[in-house]
Length: 151
Image (cartoon, rainbow, N blue to C red; front, side, top):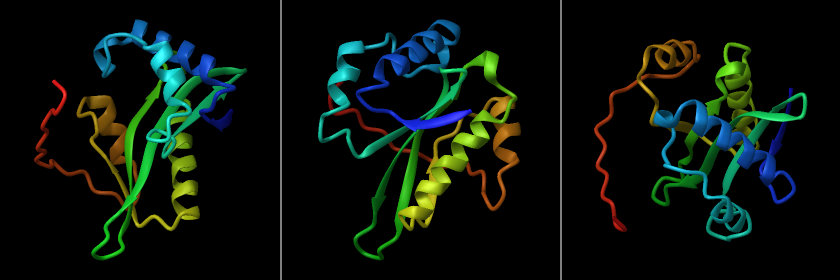
C-alpha cells in the first residue's frame, strides 16, 4: 500500500477511482456525476490548493482516499482539521486501508500542530463499527446548520 497526495500527475487515476466509486455506490457520493474537467481545473485553483486529498494505492490502482483541510480560530489559536471525505472501494474494505488513511491524516496534523480533527460521519452500522474503534475520540450527534448560497 502506498499513499500520495492528489496532484496534476495522478489526477486521472483519481478520476478513475471516483468513476468506480460512483458506479458501485452512487448513494454514497455527494455528486451526481464525475466532473472531470472541473476536478482538473481545481487541482491548480488557489482556493482548492489548501484542501489535501491523500490517495491510497494498491498494485498501482487508487483504492481509497481521505480529503481534509486545516483552519484555525483567531481568538484562541486553536488549530483544527476538517475531514471532508473518506472512502475506500468496496472490494478493498476490511483491509485496514481507511485506518491507514486516517494515520496519514494524523501524521500531517502532527506536522502542522493541529489540536483536533473532526468530520461529519456516516451513521450506518459499518461506519459506527469503524468509528467506535478510534482511540481518544468521541462520537457525537451534533446539530448542524446548513445554508446553501448557490442553490
